[in-house]
Length: 90
Image (cartoon, rainbow, N blue to C red):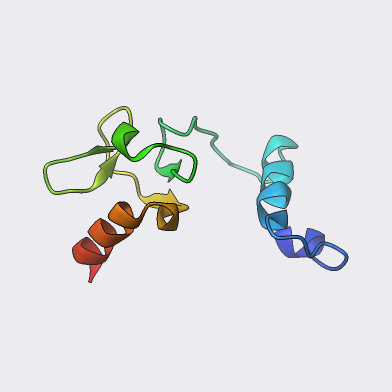
């Protein structure tokens, strides 16, 4: 569905996020669950400060409920987090 919207003239960096949000908020994806950033299995960390992130005892990023985050979006914006993830998954 995203590819249908990402064909030219959509060539501006970040278009993928805009298209993703459009599809989500117009409910075009069936059987989808929406979570707040701190509540679900996916977390966007690009805008978060490093000290606002929580980790469990094994070093995995945790959400507000203390559950491990399965997908970390924009982790590369935090060099320390990138290093930690490289160590955990190398």
